[in-house]
Length: 291
Length: 126
Image 1 (cartoon, each protein chain N blue to C red):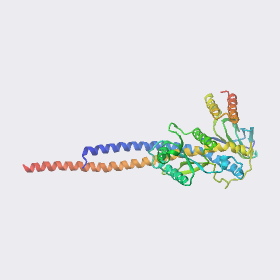
Image 2: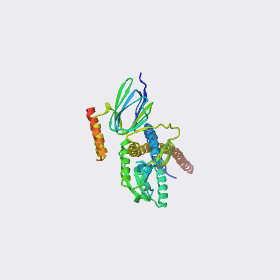
Image 3: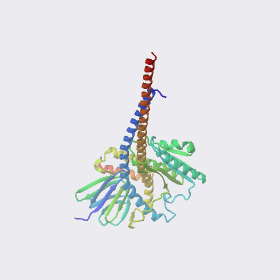
Image 4: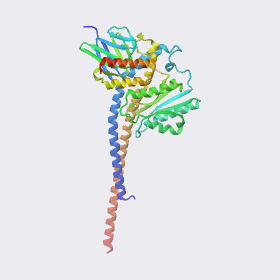
């Protein structure tokens, strides 16, 4: 039986752990609200942008002469996987789920004889995938110094990816991130960004015929690189909200578990204390009787 | 009263304006244009410049960098990569914008963006 002092120390330590997880949960809740607001604020832009792009793309995609960012290089041999995860741990299965999805895709592509390159955004995914795919890494984006995600961060990442595309380092780029559904559910998502794939916005859209200034092709050439940045920005924001949501529920669980543990340990502590008292009494009584 | 149109100005980070306007002056890539109600449906890219929104109660001015505008008969939406009210623009902000534009490359287009920025800066006198 563990002695009383050990039990007491144990209870104290679990209690302080509970305090920490509780605090982390509350911080995550506050950050989640901010992250959700940011994601919401970005939505009108992204929606509009995609609607216009879809309209433009539908007009041009019929011809083979479209920009490479839209129609692709005509090959899918070299695949770039952009794995976006968080900079910090302690957020449940958030990073693990994204990494798992990326790993499955990478294995699938390798088995199909494709060349895979991996660009990681966020430290955690990099660490997780390092053992299996460390030799496929071509770069890493560190966001740990970034306090508040801005469009500028997305632009920097997009610029890096686009310059690699211009240098013909890859044919197809896919980003991996977690879409925020709710605090308890974040869905790991893979989205192809190059060549651009737009959801069909055709349904319910009134088919206004637009005049284009300068020309349709010029606008497309101008907007496609921005589209990459926009999608990365949206993914970064979704990821930020997901991370905080995942951390919040993970820390909520941890707090609850710590509470249960404290209860159990306290009962054990009380029992041992009583046993000790009983023992002492028996010793006194038998001592008295022996006289 | 002149017919009005719905005007929205959004940047990736926030929605800056959503108002009923009578006319919107847009710094298009091919030249300035003014959108009023019943304008032909047009999509144009933007150059860095000043966007002027005239409502019944006055006029607002915004600094926009690249992006595009979607004009229909009843509404005008401007999706700007970066946008801010002119009153918030300072010399320091312009300096960063210009520095960013200069860092983007030395092609003709990049040079044009830089000179547009410098023109804006001169016009705003900050």
